[in-house]
Image (cartoon, rainbow, N blue to C red; front, side, top):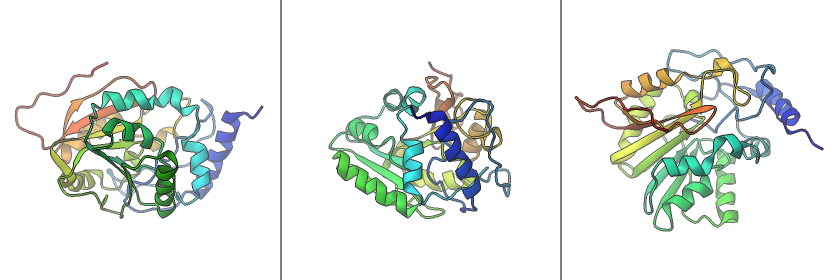
Amino acid sequence: MIDPIRNFRRAFSVLSVAAVLFGNVPSARAEQAHREPHGDAAPAATPRGKHDATVRHSFDDVQHWVAMFDDPARDQWQKPAELVRALGIGAGMRVADLGAGTGYFSRYLSAAVGESGTVFAVDPEPNLVAHLRERAEREGTANVVPVLASRENPRLPAAGIDLVLVVDTFHHIDDRPGYFRRLAGCLKPGGRVAIVDFKKEDLPVGPPLDHKLTRDQIVEEMQAAGYRLVAEPGLLPYQYALIFGVPARAGDEPSKKTD
């Protein structure tokens, strides 16, 4: 029997060798790979500043990332269906999956917005965007629209998005406060940004500790970008889920964590 943990550890070793400077863009969800609790950690690229990416990778090898991101074992701890329900996505909404990677969340988001809604699957890697289009055709999700992002621009319609989902991508973005200030222009009034990323702890899955950001740092950076924390569903074992609204308003009370 194939040992998935061993295979994922081997893939993660390949990942560490392939790390390159990728620029200030939210790329695919790197480092989803399972690893042994005390396995070797890949070295992080040295960040250029406090708000820069903790690591940068190339994502042009689509089959490598498909094997990693779409591993069925991921469902047990990522809980994609439960997470999408917790985000309160309704029929007719326009949702962006920022750093969509191989499209792991595409079919869940597609079902949530329905035929009258749209899912923008955003990624800066051309090979992954081509894969997202092929996947949408294969899965019959006509409401999934792949978008090739640029380094500093997600290429989303102005004031056109109800929710932006950012899963395991936030720590790949340079100048995050600046990036998310610009992203706010893509949100409809009352629009939200949901950030899901690994807790800065030693975990059986996810990236090395020095690639991670703490929950408090993400809240601080999003507040610096003009957002306010509005909800924090506590449903994932290894990750925090933080939902932000924009703009911040005087007198708003900090959100309470919800289970």
